[in-house]
Image (cartoon, rainbow, N blue to C red; front, side, top):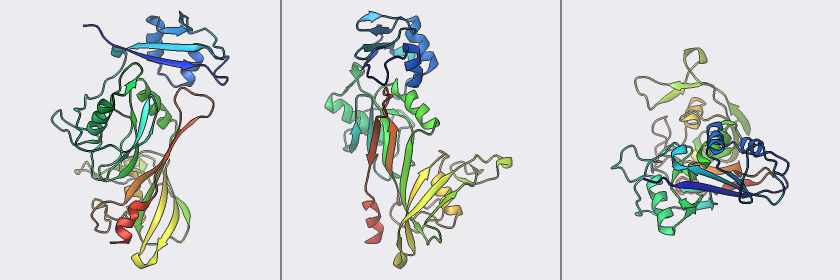
Length: 309
């Protein structure tokens, strides 16, 4: 059976001119094994002509990269479910930023599970007939939000962009900010939590503060108090993740004596949902070196659920 090809076309701008193809692919964070596949399979063309990875690019050149589907690690497939509408905050050829509701899982753990964000994104892409790299777009997970957390999450639309986004996250080039309503008040309007976090046994789904020598992993969260609610004994925080440990924000806040409202796992005040939202995502736009960004943001109206309750 014939496999399908993914084709990425990029017009070279001034910021990319002067790079060799190899240098540019490296700067774009295209993984080494995929660069090798392009070279071996003669999958690189400039202005319609095959070139080697040593070819130096000029302004206005049309660079075409052709990949075989077998070059990539596959995800899913995630069965399409159109029962719920997806809230798309940003979209281009390669990725989407969507607003995940609280209480929704990111992805399915079995082929029969369909009530997840990626199932709904799959249905949305199919319904709109979206194309990505010359093929029907699919939903690819690049990072996670806890089921109880709402807000912005990046979804890849093709398998080439997934390792690029993963590398951007690893290199700390993706800015992730959250808003949370937490119990108590803060003496300082800004600060950091840097306690290491590890897995609590036998309850594997829980994490807690744990010394590095005992298996904890370094973790860093910074916070800023946006608003105090004395009548509720609560504070609205903006939180910035500098590392990506599981349940990091929840553990750091609980350990500090300021658990997130509605966080039943880590001692939060009882409420109908956990009041934590991914509110800001900023990342370099893939395949650009001119400083272009993907930027998405949400307001913090979600806290009104508690303030008005």
